[in-house]
Image (cartoon, helix red, strand yellow):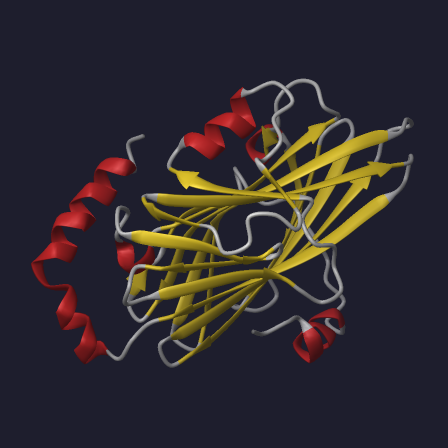
Length: 269
C-alpha cells in the first residue's frame, strides 16, 4: 500500500496557500483512478477504479467526551482548502473545540487505486478535550451494495470483497491502532455514532480478529485521546481498491445490474 512518502515532500515544497472555497465538490485523479470529495460534509462520495465507482460514503465524526453524540464535518466550518495537484487535496475544518485537517493523496495504476489520508485533530479551545474520532466507511464494491464481505484481519485492518473486487483499509505509518472497531449492516453504525448518546464502537483493540460480516456492509474505526489546550492527535489510513481485468467482469452478468438498482435505492436512505 502507498503512503505519503516522497510525493508528500514535493507537495510541501510548493508552499501551499489556503483560501476559503466557494465550490464544495473536489475531484481528484491519477493513473486512471478518480475520487470525489464533497467538502461541505467532508465525505468521499466516489472512488472510481476500473471504470466503476466503489464508494458510497467515507467520512469522519467527532465528539468531545462520552456524553452526547458525534458530529459530522457538515456541522463544522470549512476554513480552507488546497488542491495544487489533481491527485492531492487538503481540507481544514473547525468548531469551537476542535480543528481537523484532512489530507488526501490518490495514487492510481492499471485496475488499482490507492487513497491515503492523513488526519490531524487539534484542541483549539482553552480547556482540555476528550476527543472521540470516528472514521466511518461504506464501500459498495463493484458498485453493488448487498454482496460485500468485510473481515477484520487485525485491530487496524479491514478487508472487504464482493468475490470479484477487493478493498483494504489499514492504519499505517506509525500512527495509533484504533481503540475500537465495528462492522455491520448499513446504516446501523452511522446511526449509532450520530444518534446514540456516548456511543462506542463494539469491539476493542485485540478482539474480534477474523470476524466477518456479509451483506450491505459498513465498518468504522474509533480513536480516543485526551487533548490538552493546543494539543493535537495525528493518524493516517490507506485504502487500496483492486479490480480484475475487464474480461473477468463479465462474470457479474445481469445479477450486478440488479444489485446496482438496489444501490440506487440506498442513495435515498
